[in-house]
Length: 404
Ligand SMILES: Cc1ncc(COP(=O)(O)O)c(C=O)c1O
Picture 1: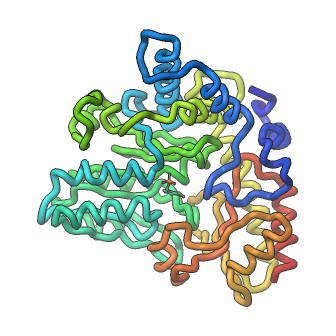
Picture 2 (picture 1 turned 180 degrees about the vertical axis):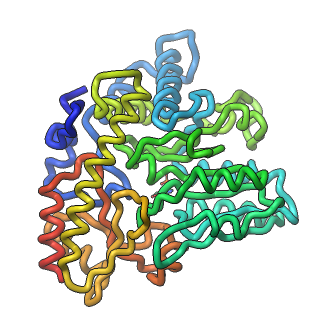
């Protein structure tokens, strides 16, 4: 690992690790998927270039596959503060959430209730809505306050009952960055006797995470949002997973967590996931175990991104006709903007001509976009990443000035 590790956040050293940045674009598209450091690409390629077979302990090829899986479970567990024995991998968070929603819903019936929110990405909404419908259970919606962008404990309390079986809530909004008080929300869910399924896809890329402190019974995230390859994972207590029985093939193992992982895992992407976690840990400096370095590294990322976010907010405050929808008290560095005189999609195109990548849309947080009064068009999303720097911010602000 390189020079990226230091006490002061060294963004130049970080950027030197990202081959994609040499293409010259300023990337504000991280919330859709981050760029990847060379260490991750090397780990993927090295795995594909090594003897590899199905998991086992007999041949070198079998051991390589097994070691890669166990290392990735340990890495994700360190990243989120979970138990490696409860880390489930899958193609994406969406796929895992669909699978788990059907498995969890097997015990639901008429009269049971499920709570989803108007803040969440649709991947933590529709699977639960559809699973509830299939079982005759009722869906209740915790509302988003469109003025503040907050999802409050009061909004959840208003829809909880002693029939609530599950609360699905986001750790942070990928549209407007809101970080609800997840610990307070999951405590309410638990008081009602419900499980809490927390979508950590956006949050995990921007802050230290501790699933126990969040009170998440199941915590979903996607490595491709935190500098890793394209796959998804869910972390839960192994004891909880033992109570759940997904559909599976007859000859495949019934062990936890494997019984939730359908088919052969993408070993090369798991190796890349471990490399991404190790990269983030290196940002925390040399001291302590990986979990401690990750906590320090993500705190350094958070401070770096927050400083740049403040610069962007100061810059856009001086521009005419810009509305900033990211207003929550506690939030990630993810800004949603609309413009009085130009559709966001046009502004996005104008920025793209300058190689400033900031997409427009609702980003599948369609309920939130509609609740904010932005319909399905959403707005322009400006997202920061560990490799963002002041020059990127300058280019963004110049591009916006020219576009408006
Ligand atoms: C907050 C949030 N949840 C869920 C998802 C879906 O993740 P995946 O692409 O792994 O299914 C995304 C992807 O953008 C997201 O931002």
